[in-house]
Length: 225
Image 1 (spheres, rainbow, N blue to C red):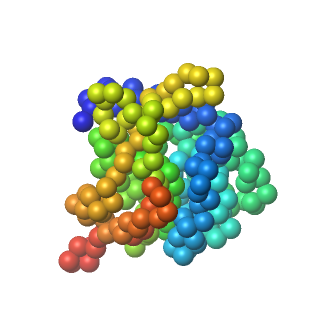
Image 2: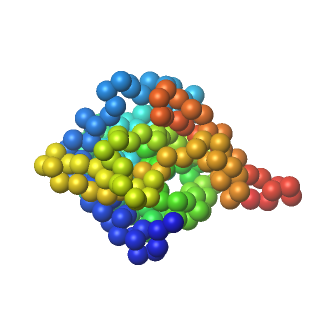
């Protein structure tokens, strides 16, 4: 695993990358995939109540969650991404609020019934995996639920020779490159890793490299949360 300083440096570069790619982000989806299976999984999960969305990006998933949430708080580090999300959700009414913050520095000031994050978990470095899930736990009400969707896709030219398999190099439209985290989780290992830190999450493979997970915190034998 990378050292603390290396993780912080790469996370800063990752934040910069998503700010820079914001205008083109929605054109970067895999051409052979339309997302229907993940959308259906989210709809079947039925997020409800007060919902927290982490790493909302341009609001593609925010738009699906907002109509079924009593309230929706969407957090992202990139002001450029949030600008597009606000524009997309401008007619959604007053139940959506956007927060600009680095997720690893943000702290919830309330509890939520549901936490959702789509295409974010693979960008959480393994060194911050436990820290991130602790944040999710602090944000949830007792009995609260979690849904996430993601992928392990990377092109051959994204690999960094001799580098970590969890880090890739992405090219921007102007030809410059950024190095970001892209963790290709083994789905059964992911379930096991989550169980070890107190979560009961079922992870389901979807079309191609995509998958989704849903579940909640494990309930101790004495019923305490």
